[in-house]
Amino acid sequence: MAKLELTSTMKLVGIDWAAEEHAVCVVDSGGAEVAAFMIAHTKDGFAKLVTRLVSLGVPGEMPVAIERPDGRLVDRLLEAGHRVVPVSGRAIKAWRESEVASGAKSDPGDAEVIAEYLRLRLRHLRVLEPFSDQTRALRAVVRARDDLVHARVAAHNQLEACLDAFWPGAKAIFADVTSEIALAFLERYPTPSSANALGEKRMAAFCIKHGYSGRRSAAELLTRLGAAPDGIGAGPEAEARRDAVLGYVGVIRALNTSIKALARSVAAHLGEHQDSKIFTSLPRSGQVNAAQMLAEWGDCRQAYDGPDAVAAMAGLTPVTKASGKHKAVHFRWACNTRFRVAVTTFADNSRHDSPWAADIYKRATGRGCDHPHAVRILARAWVRVIYRCWLDRVPYDANNHTAAVRLAEQQSAADHSTRSEAA
Image (tube, rainbow, N blue to C red; front, side, top):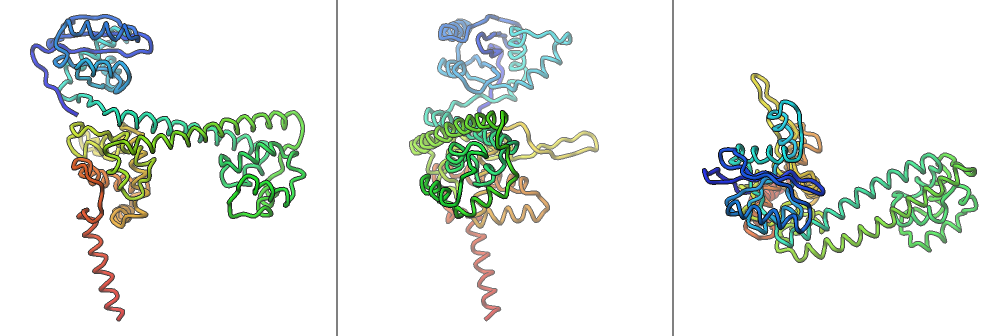
């Protein structure tokens, strides 16, 4: 991300974002207020903002600070030629509390605080680099899919809690209660009493009908069902729980369908992206995980000073806190959490296919790092490799990865020495 320098003729804009109406404050380089007004979150409101700012100065020389890195308002400002500076809501809150001793708060006041924060901290802040249309499209479907996966996890936990309270056997019979075969079973047998007549032949017929391809036979499935604690067979609670189970099943079925549809959309948009070959060439990246990394990484080569900036954004670099004689290194909480999950998931998977990745992970755990810490160390190492591929626009090739080739040669030499000694 590019940086800005304050000039004597520069005007700076602070916008306090809200759902329906935004407060705008414009100050000059000395901090004096030039203009303050409100705009609606509408097409006409955005047009009013752009027109008003043009009357006050040249868009390219009038940076705008706002507590959001994206959205239609940000898009409109970028289209008008303004350099948008996303600012942290926590930083603005702390700044306001230090500046406003009374604790008073208002939208126009917040806009003024944001503009003043931009003026005084301008050289430390970074200008937003817009994503390409391809990246924005990929990010939209990737994030939508991830959100639905989280919703399915929540529904899964709720369904399991319901079954634990009323029919544990239905939870235990299949490995995953959100699988198609488990959902079909719950639709057909939503209460313990409905499964009273379920024998081995009927269970086998049910499995055949629904295409069950698991390793367990019908007899084994019935054994798992019977080994669980008894459920509530009849009465008002059983009837209520039946309705609840069917409700959860309906929600999970809908989520499964939507997640599959979005996965196909993710694959389609990933295939259209100019950088897709870079991320899909990584070991064990897969389609979805590659898309998750690319959607958050982006395709703007001017956005990062180097691989360390990418690693920091993904929360892979620790934070050092030093005061007097005290010095400590902490986990980095402030980051793009979606990016962190995507990169660490890839790193964890890659060690099962890349000897170089496995070696880094092994050496990290050998130093006493726990699994999450070792995976973050590996992910940071991968970021350096991916950054070079991304910058050069070439897919990953282990034969061109110097460290990986060196490790392979060392292992080959060690194996040859062992065979020679054995001979």
